[in-house]
Length: 382
Image (cartoon, rainbow, N blue to C red; front, side, top):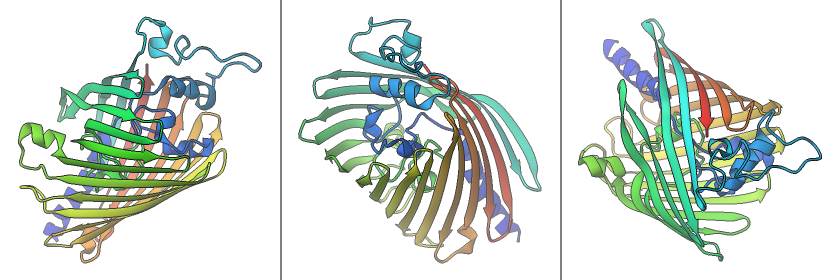
């Protein structure tokens, strides 16, 4: 029983403590606002990171509680209002260069049932983002603190050059997170952490994409995780991924994904596949349901699964209520079964002010051992 308890402790701690890290990302909940594509608001084809001028304006006029322009007035220029970089302090001085600052002061309360409780106040993110566009070319960079233990190191964890042709063909080369599935803002979601797609799992590689009015195809290949290549950790392995999205309606999308990782000193060769369906029956309700299966040579089980559902409801303009049941299990070992329930509140009172309150309850199904995590953060995007 002590071995089982140690296994439970290790697994639940790895699931719960992951809530201490995060990064600016796209929000799939906005499918209810008829935004099916990440590039509607973001420079990155896979979502997240720096907002385009249109995305900045949209966050003011459509998403914030008190930020939109008064009825009957013309919205402000994206380069001069509160939605602009540093609230428009620099005006047009930067020309075609777009910058952003991402700050997330946070509080974490973590309880391991029957063992104890720990709390922590910290600055989750302190990032500078920038992009320069010239014609079909985009030059993108992101730099900030990478949390490590009680401190952090300065790291440029995303930088790439992209080209987008008018016929829908796109190319991107550099360091980025490969396209796979649905990229929730919560990086601790099982379909991200258990697939090796957290915010620090960027690769150095090349991505080819093709976009039409109703579909997006993204194919990526690279020699492995960027940090593993830089640090020569021995954990780097060739990676290939693919993502195909079909927009059935303006509020319905289906995403098919595939991922292959080669052998490394730390991990056996694996491949994964998944499908996710997003459906927004009204302008205030969004649901996402996904299933992912991973195959890997492992002594315990060679096939693991992740099921995730998320329902988000806009109770009042800019105030979203969120619930997400999740489960991870293996075909041959009940020890690997983890159940999670996430309850959350997202409040966007002003443009680029985001208050996030999230409660996580993780439980190991075999033993009943569990953890409870509460995360409170103020996300400021300047």
